[in-house]
Amino acid sequence: MRITKAIFAKQAKDMFKNPAVLVMFIVFPAVAFIMTALVRVEDMPPNMFVTMMAAIFAGMGLITSVAGAIAEDIELKSLRFLVIAGVKPHQYLLGIGGFFLLAGTVTSVIFALIGDFTATEFVKFLVIMVSGTAASILLGATIGMWSKNAQAAGGLAMPFAMIIGFTPMIANFNETVAKVAGVLYTQQINVIVNDFEESMVRPLLVIAANIVVLTVFFVIAYRKKGLKG
Image 1 (cartoon, rainbow, N blue to C red):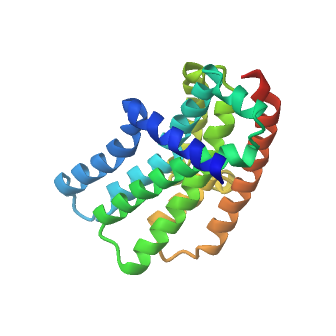
Image 2: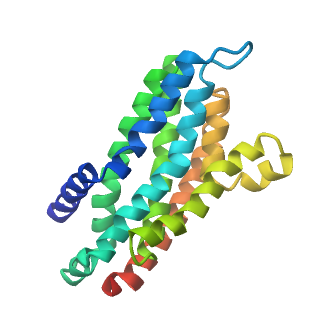
């Protein structure tokens, strides 16, 4: 636990030194707030911009941020020293990922406060957002592990972020894409935030399956790339 706390604290300091990462957690809810306050269209769902920006944040913004943070550790040789010191994959992931999960949860709460949700919708929104945030952190962490530096991580993470983030939007207009996208955790976020009457069971099971698979990929990447960082 001491090691995990130290890595958590290190990541917190690194984030506040890096405005490019910090802004990711501010700009999406800010846009949602501004658009919700200023745009009024007949028959438009009241929470359209909140749910739209929240889904993009969970599916895109976090992937690039986490990938960049871990790739920076590789570039600065920090990860190599941690591995040599005996830091296990779960300790490193809990430290780095735990910080981003906390930051993502705070951002999700801000989204929820901007939206006009009932108490039940508020809880469902937070549960699905935090679950999706965890999956995005794992995907970003895996991409970061396979990157040589922060710049390379950005280039590698962006295509994944675009696919993961925008496929659910396309699925809204194409049934075939919707069926294929059903295996993606972002599609399950999309399903719930656009219809809170939907059952949470299947979306959470799909997201849980994504988390398990992505955790395995991260552990493999950590063990293969850690000493090369």
